Amino acid sequence: MASLGLAQRIRIGHDGNSGTLFPMMGRVNLGRRRVGLRVMASEGHQSSVEPDLSVTVNGLKMPNPFVIGSGPPGTNYTVMKRAFDEGWGAVIAKTVSLEADKVKNVTPRYAKLRADANGSAKGQIIGWQNIELISDRPLETMLKEFRQLKEEYPERILIASIMEEYNKAAWEELIYRVEETGIDAIEINFSCPHGMPERRMGAAVGQDCDLLEEVCGWINAVATVPVWAKMTPNITDITKPARVSLNKGCEGVSAINTIMSVMGINLDTLRPEPCVEGYSTPGGYSSKAVHPIALAKVMNIARMMKSEFGDKDLSLSAIGGVETGGDAAEFILLGANTVQVCTGVMMHGYGLVKTLCSELKDFMRKHNFSSIEDFRGTSLDYFTTHTDLVRRQQEAIRQRKVVKKGLQSDKDWTGDGFVQETESMVSN
Image (cartoon, rainbow, N blue to C red; front, side, top):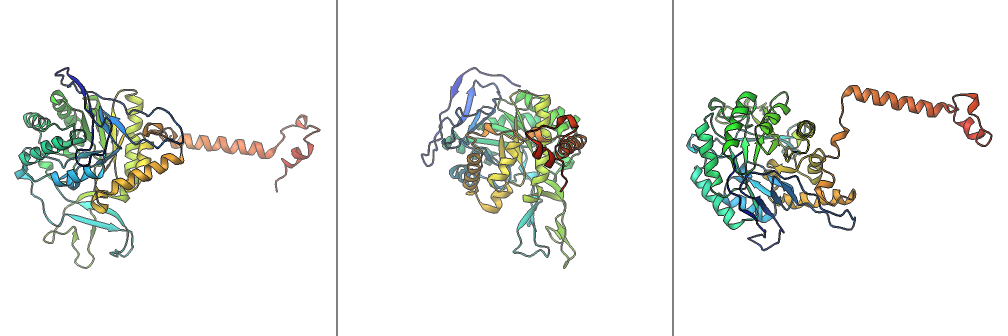
């Protein structure tokens, strides 16, 4: 990783728009060298204390762990400003590249899956597909808006999502240009499941560990802010690219991006959805239905990080079907430092963060947790192999049989407990 100056400072934050205080929010800048800091737990565990949702991840202090995931909710200044005003812990902008003119989106580009068997418009939305590409706005426009946001919200965390072709010089230029705006971190899009694979972009890199290793090397040789690598779920073993990214210098990983899918076929028109001039293409699947899949992927990454990277200052940002505080709590229980939301915002609006924070606090109160760190990773140790499950159950059955059988030998009878000892061997 690149090492530059040694100037040390801590930016004390406040909400530049409303004046709401966020003590110590912003980047904890220990010089300009890239650093990784473990999430800090609040001291004191008194049940009467209001749960503290603030987290510090890779030196970035956030008022809560909820992050706007890269996509339409972070597509321009207006919507990112709205996200900060509503109280999101951080915002990841929509992915940018050097040549936005090569990006051509179509409409319609979304399709929904509803729980109602007949596809009723009143059925609950459980799945969402998109065939949307990265930002089609000129890079200079996006950079200008990054600068404006950092000027107006210097203490809030703005993360640039970037993606480029297989070209070292292009990656270096893009990193340099986004860092000039004052953004706090970079998320590398190694996972977009559709669009421009012929340019070796997105999942085309994330699915090829040799290519990923080389590109991560280029990136981390020049980046001076924390780097997160965003993982694709469209791979057999997601721990492999995660391991490569961390070994090559990334401070964190994000998982998962959307799952490659075909949303469905219209049984009246016989055409696929979303339908563009009668045709479609496979796209990325998100929303509630992917949550169990995302939990499994995040669990696998977290276990790998715990066993292979130990106490190194690395982070995990979880993504996938988050619409409630409970959804977020599950990811944090598996070891996630932050939780990203994209489709949930598209469905429920930016005000969703208030519900997420309220429900997560309710969960924390229920279990007497005062900080995120109090329960982060708590459930991770309860996963094991199927062979071990069989062993554990056989042992439990054996123990229950011992209890039900009662005395094992005539020598075990006692005078004081004779009646109870008799009952312990009765079968009905």
